[in-house]
Amino acid sequence: MSEVHYIEMLRSSFTLIILIFCSIISVTFTLERLFYFRRIRLDPASFLARVKQLIDAGNFKDAAALCDRMRGPIPVVVKTAIVNHQKPKAALEELLGAIRLEERLKMERFLVVLGTLGNTAPFIGLFGTVVGIIKAFRDLALSGTGGPAVVAKGIAEALVATAAGLVVAIPAVIIYNYFMRKVKTISTMMEAISLKILVYLQG
Image (cartoon, rainbow, N blue to C red; front, top):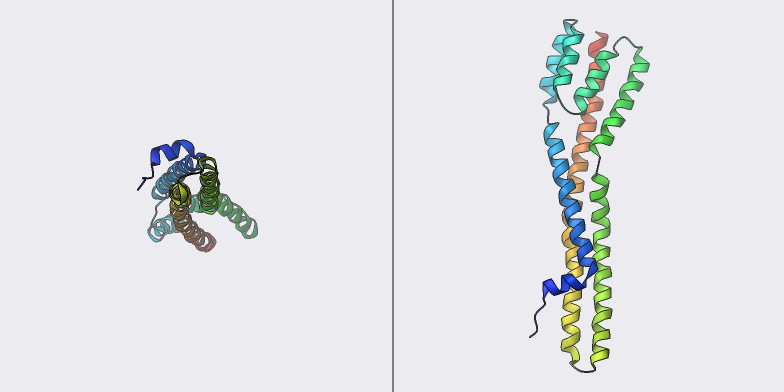
């Protein structure tokens, strides 16, 4: 029984090369986002308690300095509220809303790439399979001999493209959903903390 030669197939299939490139992009952006969310990790309750103590003491400068020492969208939102605490409440609410949108965009950076790869990689693999099957039948027609064995080998090689597409797409979709869940959670925290910090500043 003839074997499927993956190295030779890789050289002759441009769709597999595209899928390998897609997998490299997926891994790169996944690692970048993992490091990003790890850097901005924060205990909101503890952070907000420290900020509240400084605000209650009227020490707005130290409260803003505390925010500067922290990373992530939540300290940015809190610092914006502290620095602009003398503005009218309505204006401050609008300002905080705009800051939250900006910080959400930062958190969603590159996630569209993972989502796109998850949606398109299967179709790229399917395209490679269709092209491979067409090639297998063409080879059979040109050779005139070999029967089903020739077609079976060509189809087996062609189906590898579909498998490769799924291998790229499935992790990309899972990782995309994981990061979007984190974005949603942090965004909800930002909204809740915005309301709390407004109350603290009014007190």
